[in-house]
Length: 77
Image (cartoon, rainbow, N blue to C red; front, side, top):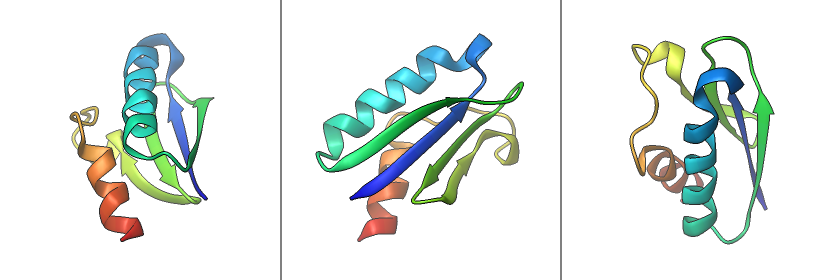
């Protein structure tokens, strides 16, 4: 089973982390998802301990709908 960890800044990105969690649950039936309180400004996603999305490296933007899902699909296929 694949495992996803979403580290997010709880003060601002709680709704985005929840949205992404629901998106991943909808698109991947066999996936473990863990939401973890991160540092100020952080929104980072790991798949099986490998960083696949980092808001800080992408000019400060949060992931678009289906963006992380597509990254995971391309990584596991």
